[in-house]
Length: 360
Image (cartoon, rainbow, N blue to C red; front, top):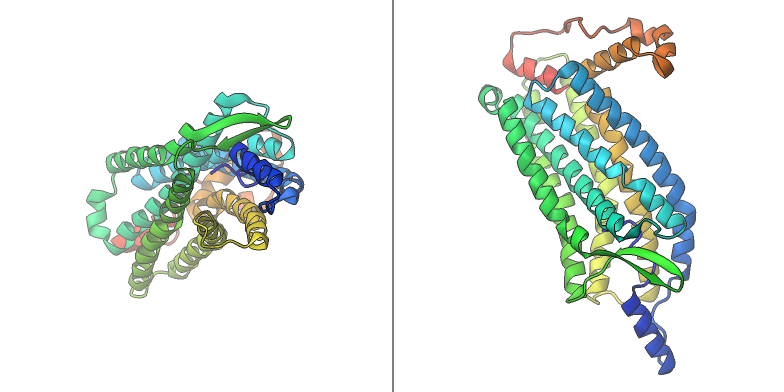
């Protein structure tokens, strides 16, 4: 699933195109404007996503290691989510340059960057799903969670999640390759045998593992969390509900359009849809919706950290102790509001309330 896979035709498609031309048969659907569209639209967007994603997730990793010190399952999942997003955004400068010009980094980096992109993609979504399960256990099964939500289980499930993400990304690593055509070098996924079957299976894998399963898990977990919170007389209840709503809406808003377009592209591969104009619109839509989905990795620090009271305290403490660009923040009024060592004013003896405070 390279971000620029739809921008040009493959060598086989070029051969077929020449054959039809010489035989005076109608030309296949041409998409000359798609590369120009990508050259104009993708590089600046990838650059912005890279900068904000790198900054936000790096701060998250620094705060977790410096202050939280990975003491719980939640901390482990948050760290792995940030690492997944970092792995994902580190591939974007390569794709941005590729969209603007051509692939100049060699076949080795073509495979590695394609693999990084997919591992970060799957890892980020998988750890968002695990975060939903973690909140579900903390709030709905508070007593059981005391035994289940341990640091050890967090590490074990994280290793298993990375393993699944790596295996799900193997086709992208194995089949990504470089080739030169008409003095232009490409980095794309090419299947030597059963090309249509592989493309359909890859698209279905992304749809199922990237949207259907995570959304099903999130819908189950958060619906029960909200039902439990209705019976919880805690001043943080409304804030928790708002955060849950933000997680679900943003996940669906940023990933659903891409998965819908990808599914329609699968129908084109299966020749269920055979309209040239529709194919062109889908290729433009695939680039636009994929770029939109990329933005979600920049929002994860906001969703899971910056809306949380504890993290605000930690990051303000970080700004106060750092020098360089952050020294000006010491004179900001916000720095006087929180202290990382100040206990929460909403402390309660209830186990559910305690886990709710941790979830925020």
